[in-house]
Amino acid sequence: MSSRVVVIGAGIAGLATAHRLLRAPGAPEVLVLEARDRVGGKISSASVGGLELEAGPDSLLARKPWAVELCRELGLGDDLVAPTSAQAQVYGRAGLVRFPSGPYGISTDLLELLRWPGMSYAGKVRAGLDLVLPRRHDEGDESLGSLLRRRIGAEATGTLVAPLLGGLFAGDVDRLSVRATFPELAARAARSDGAPPPPMFLRLRGGLRRLTEGLAESIGPDRLLMQTPATALRRAGEAFVIQTAEREISADVVVMAAPAFVTADLVEEVAPAVVAELRAITHVSTAVVLLVYPDGTGAPLPDSSGFVAPLGALAVTAATLVSRKWPDPSFGDRAVARAFVGALGTEAAVEADDDELVERVARQLAELYPLPSRPESAEVIRWPRAMPQYEVGHLERVQAIEDGLPEGVFVVGQAYRGTGIPDCVMQADAVAERVLAVTGA
Image: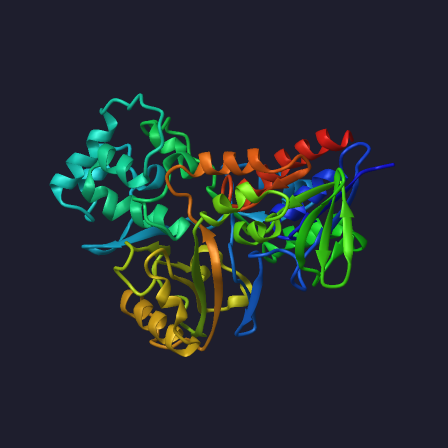
């Protein structure tokens, strides 16, 4: 008799775990529970001005291959497209300026760095020392801010890298862990070999929801229980019982693919020792503001994919000029933008009502780009407690959580070993292997 695996949560991590389990030889019985009426979690879209726009993430980090490989496995590989060559910008003392080349804005070309207008001459020289400074041999964890200031100095950290990395995590670089976020920054940036780099990001024609919808189709509707939130988990001999509002569901193995704070409530009875660690993973609330402008506003935009800004410098933490970065015939000559609001310490900005938030964001964008002060259509999508914070010591905390769970209970998802879509797919593959080892499949 095959084992039953219940996956709680139908975001990308839960769906990818179920998909991988079902493709294994001698696959176990798999059931996925989802509290909402749709799959995908933060991968979702919204209709604004007659356009279907990404309400959550808009692309895949292509240099982490797991999500791209999954798209190809699902037959979506031919629909992966790269962004245009429009330059990313950063807001600073000189206004909006393009990022220097090099990883995370840390240029490996000293002459280029010296010509860059966004910093003082002294700041550029100090940043250039990164090319000759020896690596630290201490393997202990530290904050991104600590490492960056030691390597490239305070000005380059605050001007270049903190806006980019802090924006990715909606966090404070002085609290974010190097080992859990960007361990490659602990090594000196490698020099370019002169070959053109592959695209950093790829998107799916028709939206990223095609990935999660493709996974749901692969899993099958009979294995997906929508609008079925789990409310409790308890032991039943060597197995488990999951309580929902309607019934009890038995499971030999449970994969928790829900946010860490939801998982903490569910495992209180079966793993009380890990509850405090799960609740200690801070989650920050953010919002995405989608803006569609009138016809004729697209052409005047500069050749820019968008910008990031230091925390607190502007009303937004970042913005994407969608019609420049990801042009689509449906846009016509309309400017289309996505702006991001909220980060650790600025979450109050997310609480403004929709009209106020749209007005504030549109006014800010009009000051930076040739755009009207009001869009033709707009939509605000709030993501409460959406961004887990990988603070110093995060990986040790995750290991303690994994070690403290009873055999047959696993965690997977954004809160643990990588927040991006590729990271969640990679985690799903690893957890599926561990589940199959337990079930003997």
